[in-house]
Length: 265
Image: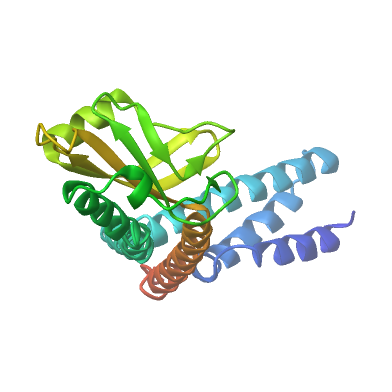
């Protein structure tokens, strides 16, 4: 490669440097190259390798320094973290608030069904008279269902069947309902089967009404589908907001980056 071509190559390589760096040092670097080319003691092949190595090293250092000075300013990082936190909180709110509304609404009409059955039992009606006669396979049906249990949590009567059996919550759930009078839970009697359940305690009167529990439940399948869509929407909104934060902070950082001015000699 001739000296003229080396100078052309070097001049084009200098275009890769930041504009402020070129305005300050390009002329001096080109002059240093000419002086080095005029020295015949250094073999041309080794000289070209040194030039390429020097260009790569200095380019890396200059852009690393520019990135650090432009984007890693403490105030800029602080503002970016605050905006990212706000975006995250908003995305969580977009998901959590509607999700809680969906989940609470999933207890309807179980509350009404359970309370009506308890009132019927307290008024002297039997389970056969108060409990609807139809049998519901709750592994498939979305219909609400009722189950009555005795004081020990053993099933007495039920509309619901799961794998041919009457499901029952754990003893701990019944102990909690006995002390609190009521519980509204997400009940998962088996893997893949989740229900919004309302459980009420029926205090015995020692005569016509025996102590027990009433459970009204309904499948959460459709609610969970809506929750999944809501989660996807909230995540998409979070990605959009984080993208705006990143783009905005990059633009602001570049616009307000420290600028080096050439010093007149």
